[in-house]
Length: 187
Image (tube, rainbow, N blue to C red; front, top):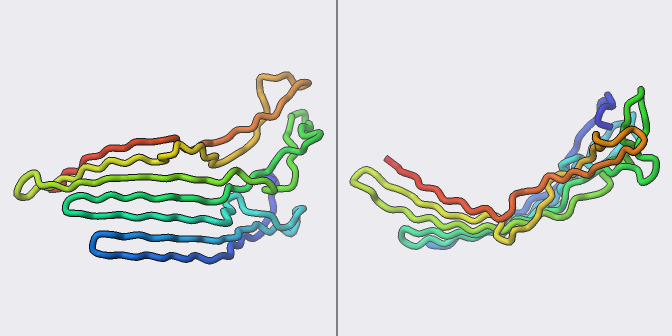
């Protein structure tokens, strides 16, 4: 439906809950979001289907601890996979005006796998002089090296001749384990 010109609506309904507990040295929070996001186009079949960014469930659990000049924090992010439109299982490639085109099944009826990421960071503050301070930060994102598929789409293999065309599934994947180090000079 990418090239169909029509007008319609987009609606999201949901709820978000956040619990946060703070003490002198600790901060922790848990959040959960339920959201149902749909497109509605009266001139299409089906008229209503999930939005491309319809992430039904999303949860975050995080905590940080501060002691003197040190701070350590960790967090876990999880959410359900985004919708995907799949090519038809049979006769998925047709020719329109002499050009091959992928024919898709009902829009956004499949989903990518769930997203999961765990992170850890450490920060140290120190003085460099009377009016100068510094912060050194070290973090590791995606500690579990989880392969998270962010988006899936399909293309035609341009290296094939028109009699042997094949559909390629393309997955955009998040970074694996990612270390970061930074130094800030504050003056």
